[in-house]
Image (cartoon, rainbow, N blue to C red; front, top):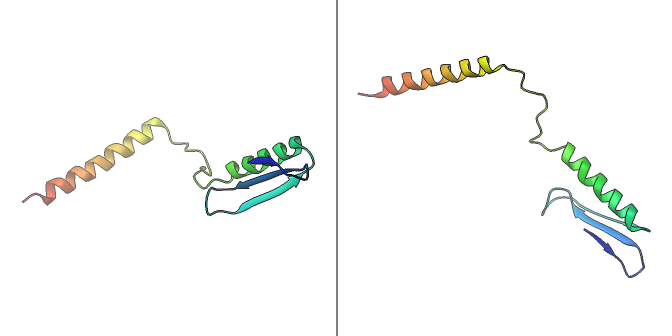
Length: 84
């Protein structure tokens, strides 16, 4: 959030990952500087998300289908062996 202080400066006040996370507060002489800083911090945060995959999944559709079928074959075998 960007707000104007009584001194005439602009203050950026935000939390990197919501409530309970690190709080960043910094003052600037212009609103444009404050907006650039806010965009920089939020952009840097989005690059470091834990859910962001580290590398692409290079498996082909054929490999994925084969894996799914083998998984379901094992599940079917478990159901057959567990029945009295």
